[in-house]
Image (cartoon, rainbow, N blue to C red):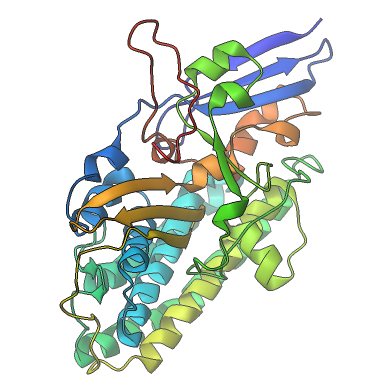
Length: 407
């Protein structure tokens, strides 16, 4: 006889979530559902009716862990809607901020998984390594983006300004000095994850993966015609979960997909690993690519070149603009539409969480339920990102079944 096991709240992620598993008489998980119960905040509606410049400032507050991808996705969407092409230096500085943020965010992830993978005798080494990497990476974000948490210098049309030649040389020197230390850190984490001897196939699935770029993002690769979004009650067969879940389910070609480091490694690096271990390895190895890219940008950057288009016409043509950014935890897509009155008419954010974990599926099925938390930490831990808006009937409090993307 099947037994339902509910873990609520789950731990070690941003926001609140539940893990609901059906377990057979032998303690084997036959079905798993991991979903967000973070209260809805309505950030997309807040920016509607306001000037385009307001959106990046507001939506970067979606998450304090990954504000950089949200800011960049927002300005990219606004650029697209307004027909703006940022100058080369502005584009390079955006990519520099993103690369540094990747390094920092992946290091945070290693701090979160340290209790699972790092033995006591190596804990101090691992944590000190994480701290040093984060300090340097955040220094880059501070210098280029204006602030490490909510970057003020990432603007529609490019960046607020270029950096000085002295700043370029200083950043280049610090990142070059970090490179051998980061290499040692990645080797340590990859070795410890591989040595953990997790169950073969843990977290593996056969769902498609999606990535738009090796590190930054490309709106032209994201095909809006292949995207749909449905309400949770249409996805989760359990009525209790369908009513309680607070995020919609995005689908690509009608199915749920995986985005993030492993998806990028598969598409752009020939990576073939599957499951939780592969997730951690792909994430760690991406730190090396991100640091190398940041160094290459600083080596090439012309600090005398303009970093912003300057004045631009905020009167939109009604075009739906797309911003697709490959955030540390996966593809972050923002959509914006600016009207002829220069105000935002429509805004929607499709965040990595919703792509990655609308259901656990094969990630839990077939394993003893004790391994559930390991699967959670192998995927995207930022649940609050996924809860922006939901429509409730005022009288009976039921979820209205309209699709969310065009509200």
